Image 1 (cartoon, rainbow, N blue to C red):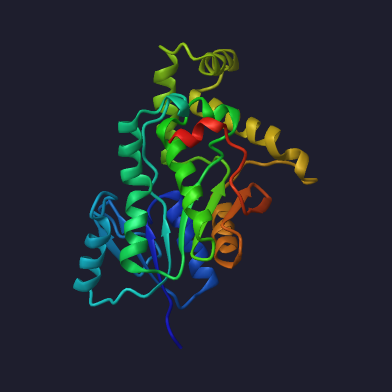
Image 2 (spheres, rainbow, N blue to C red):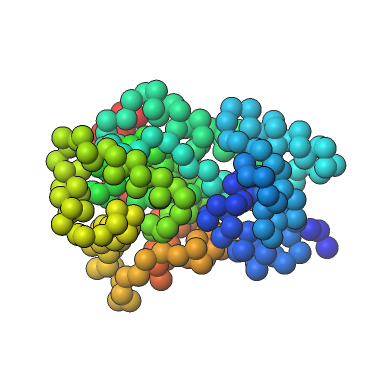
Length: 275
């Protein structure tokens, strides 16, 4: 029996670990290769490629490492998790340079991997970048997520997006730190509202930030479901990947207990088209 190969980019993070868990459960004999910028082997992976930072030329570096290990790339799927970009300001205010720098991590290496390694399926992660609260602070990351959606919609048989609700991760913690700093000097009305809400909450900012995001997610989607809203957890991301691997839709969403598919771009402000 043929052993399926999977490549998980960024295997040590929350999304990466959830992906490895899903793949091991779905396909116990699978050979899972992962990349990391940490110094420790990634838990539950069969092979870890170290010091592999998502940047230009990334796919060639992965290919060279595979050759060192005498592995011929024949991937059932590539799961791409890196997400790093400038945040803490409205998406609409993103500059061309900020967008370029963010795309160089969040999307460009994914396109390289797809073209160089030619997997059967390529999977990336997105967010609810068009909701009112996210529009005010997601910065150039919002543009990258929008572009990723467009990428998936171009070829839904070969490309998938997993859209997940807000959950605690290093990435979310990083956003909250930047946002807390930005709020001290902003004139943006949405961020000023967020600042006022925080000051009245009596919470630590990380706790407030998560609650604020969950409140907006519930407000946006609860009317579509009978089951009550709950915050998203790592296990839900595993469910999201399983859905993506089996679905015909280009975008699958997991939000707590809720799951749904999307076949077109969400209703985003018209100014997104300028990017």
